Length: 344
Length: 179
Image (cartoon, rainbow over all chains, first blue to last red; front, side):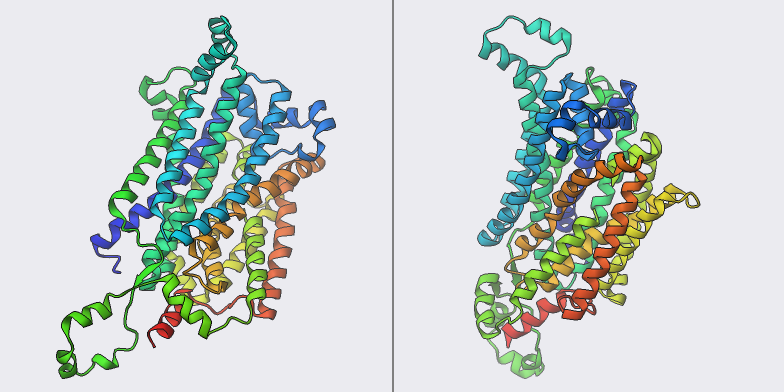
């Protein structure tokens, strides 16, 4: 692989755009919350302190009453949907469960991806679920109101709308939508990085490839921060959105970015899984020009481009070369995760 | 860190700090492959994590500009996202067959870190009366854990500190196959 070649760079950029889109979604979500609270003249630390000092939360859920990043999400949700502390507490609990669900889901996804040796289907499915989640979040107010009216057969639709209060259905919908999208953002990095390694490791460029992926991630974050503070989003995409203009604009742009990155991966990336070109490491057999001429050309091409899948190659090598330090490897993995977690 | 940072510094100032962090991170990502090749992936990773924790502990001091602190954390942002995966792939017995699984396990540190922060961050902030003390406490604990893991892994040979890239392992395995 030559990074200078356009043919090689396009798929690489397409893969890295996944990381960029994920960071864009994260950062734009963060950017949305703070301006919304500012609009209501509520400093974020005051909001968090109020929730922290809420007697209901302190007495009932002391172990979870933390000023955390989640507090801002729920602060935003609470202000947006005019929820009371019961809803806040309930949603906080649900969100914690979603995070724990994420802890379970991610390794399973990685294992499935390795088992079926495919990455792009995961990228497609996760991106679609994330976009569905975002759409659910954006449309929760309207759809929730309609569903609530149909389910309960009430005629308070107009009244609820004017009061800017969400029905129970709307709250559940918006929360499920946000949770789905958030888990998918986390999980999208798995097939993204795996695709990158599939492409770069056989060519000895994983170091550069991973650094490029990280640079794209940070670029996505930077773009989101700049767009989040620009008139493009604060005006609600130039007047396209009127109610909660900034919120809607940021999430619509996030969904569009995610969709674009997904399409670029589908169009430009050849997903071969952990399959790699066999590059001859010992060329002594081919040093002699006359010998090389004698070789059947087709056979040589097959040798040079023979595809080895991971399961084929390692099933034999692992038997011949047992790994005596398997238990230590597991310990080291745990230690790596610990350092990574604290580095967040 | 981001949410606490904007809460501590204020919205607009905090966003500018984080934008600077992004720029520094992008520059770091650009030079990271060469740094890794020179010093070794795990050495760079451990050093960067330690540097990050040091910066966090410095947030309580008044003689250093918080914007500079935030900008410098961009270095670890780039290293953290890149080298953690490379180190994990390097210690795995089969980094190709279990590629996505390894990435998923390391990626799991993402919600794990958020959960740790959610569990203890607010309590620390409330007890000491400021967000900067959260950075201080997590910085001290993180530095201790990082040093401990570094020493332990070096002593027991769990992580090859001289490893330049796990591509070497791939090609070593590759050579075994071709032989």
